[in-house]
Structure formats: C-alpha cells, structure tokens
Amino acid sequence: MNDIRTISKIWKSKPTIEGAGVHLKRAFGNSDVPLFDPFLLLDDFHSNYPPYYLKGFPWHPHRGIETITYVIHGRVEHGDSMGNKGVIESGDVQWMTAGSGIIHQEMPRGDNDGLMWGFQLWANLPASHKMMDPRYRGLTAGEIPEVVLKGDIRVKVICGELAGVSGPVRDVVIDPSYLDVTIPPETTFTHPIGRGHKVFAYVVDGEGYFDPERNAYAHEVVGDNYFDMKRQCACGAESLILYNDGAAVAISTQERPVRFLLVSGLPINEPVAWYGPIVMNSQEELQTAFEEYEKGTFIKHK
Image (cartoon, rainbow, N blue to C red; front, side, top):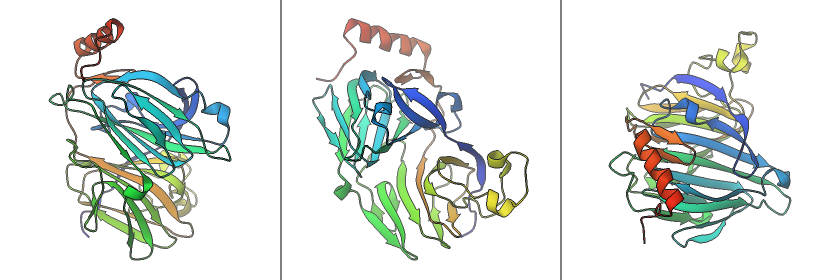
C-alpha cells in the first residue's frame, strides 16, 4: 500500500501521581496540546503493588470531554452521578461522555495477585458538543470483537472498523478508532486510516518497528548514539509513537512480538482551556464550570 504514514515523534511515558495517590505513567497530557488533537491525555496505570493504586480516583467532576478506561488486568470499581455503578473487569471498557457535566469515581482494585493494569484516554469534545447530555457505555470483554488476520495478527476492535468488523462504540463526534493490536514475530500489520486523522500508537508489550524506514527518528529514543541503529530503533514497552499524515500505517516485528494500542480521530482545531478534570474552549467557560461546581449547580442532567 502506498502513502504509508511516517513517524513524527517518539516519546517514553513518564511517571506521575494522580487522583488520591495513584502511581502511573503518562504518555501525553496537558503540555502536549495541540499535538494530539482531538485527544488530550493517555495514562498507563500498571502496578503489582496495591499501595500504589488502591487510593484510586475518588469523586471528581468532568465537563467537556470523554474518558475511555480500558482494563487489561485487574478490576476497577466505579460510580457516577447518573446512577451508573459497577466493576470494570479485565478486558472491559468504560466509555464515558462527560458533556455538560458528570461527577464520578474510579477505584482500582487489582486482580487476585495484586496486579492492576489499564489505560485511560481523554478525548476532547468540540464546542458544539461540550454541553451535550452525559452518557455512559460500559462494554464487557465479550462485547468487544477480536479479528484474526493473516499471520495470526490479533486485533480487538473497541471503536472503529477493521476487516469489515465494527467496534461496539459508535456515533462519537470525532470519528475515533481504538484498536488493541498484537503482532507475532516476523510479521507486518498494515492498516488503512483516513487522511487528516490524528494517529498515535502506544506500546503495551514487546517491541516493533512503526515506520517502514525503520531508522526514522531513532534519535528520539536513544539520544545521539547511532550504533547498532537497526536494533536500537525498535520501539519497546511504554513508547508513544505519533504519526505524520498519510493513508495507512505499517508496523512490523522481528524476533519478538509486539502489543500496542492504535488510536485515531479527527482533529477539532479549536482553542483548549484546560484545568484539572475540565476542558473547555475559554478561561471564562472554565471559571463558570468551577463556580457551578462550588455552588452545587454543576450537574445539568436529571
């Protein structure tokens, strides 16, 4: 396939602490606006030490965004101001549209061995939808289709389409795609993605080559040391790859398999005013949101 996307930049996720004391790795966030438009943040919470995650994310507000929580090990207890409550188990997804305002909590609990591993992605909403009614979609692992391609490439389709199979999350304004891809050794995965969409990949495990040239932007990962270039430029766990525009991506492996999240969406191209859990278009709108939260008038839905 012609017009394969090349790499714009590669990062490593960085340790940070959020919520009431959750230790996690941040792939990108506030300082990276507008590079990832329409996406705002990606956090990787991965720990087998319960004191690093049990305090969780107690009750807090959101407005103007969507939060997508994907758990691959362990479980997360949750509740919100719309009356939704339950547990996000291994393989489940919680896709929450905060819209005009929602208050919720997410409390990681881990598995029987104490392992907790999941991801939270924030997607922005355009000005025309920031005050839409909130909505919640809880998806169990069994509702998320897995497509097996030639070469035993396995793809879980959370949102978007692959090989004629559509994910269960639909009717989202930024036209997102969210895939969980596993590629065996010595295999190449090529996937068409519409021009104009912002695309990034985040490596969960293993290592792969995310650019057909293989040595493109290796210095972003290994500094100025170019020895053994072919080996050094493979992207390993906790690597974040941002793509330039194009019609498709191509990811290949050598000795090791690779598992990664592949996410795309249509840029909004609007001003971003962001403080804490609320993202609006202006400082005035932010001030209004926090004033309403203090006054108890933040929630607009019934």
